[in-house]
Structures are given as structure tokens and as C-alpha cells.
Length: 121
Image (tube, rainbow, N blue to C red):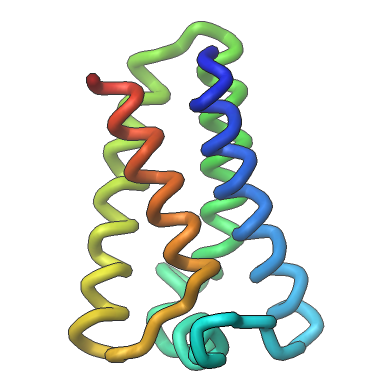
């Protein structure tokens, strides 16, 4: 597994874990870009099928690293496609529906897009 892939997965996991930690304690997230992270994370788009997005993200990053460690690149690519699609969807929600940004969410989106890029190009 490439060190850059691992680094992107670690960044994505760390951002997701921070959001998960704060939401489980119902605490306000620290946000540099104006404090709109809470509006995004606690919105109705913060969960998919009842699962918090940050929990799904943490599971994805662990799954990805394990799949790549086991040389299951085709499985990792399928997971990366799904994560890429979810990231684009959530970016569009932030931009056009909520009209608010969460830098922690942006960090996971950049990580997911970077992971997909590295796995396919």
C-alpha cells in the first residue's frame, strides 16, 4: 500500500473520529471557517440510513486499509467509488442545500477524492 494512500486514509479517519467523538458527547465542534460545522454535522444530512456519516467514514477507512493490506485492490476500488460518490453528494448538499461548510467534512471529502484518484490513476 502506498504511503500516500495510508496518509489520506489516516487523515479521513482522524477527521471522522473527531466528529464522532464530539457528536457522541453532544459537544460543539471546533471550526476555523466560521463555526458552521455544527449546522452541517447535526443537519438531517448527517446520517444515512440511520448511521452517522462519520461512523460510516471511520468504518470505510479501516476497511480500505485492511483490503489494501490484504491485496484486495478490486474490493478497495469498489469501496473507493462508493466513498467518492458519497463525498460528492455531501459536498453538493453543503454547497446548494445547506449553503454552509464544515472543514472536517471537507477534509474527509478531499481524502476520499484523493484515495479514489490514487486507486484509479
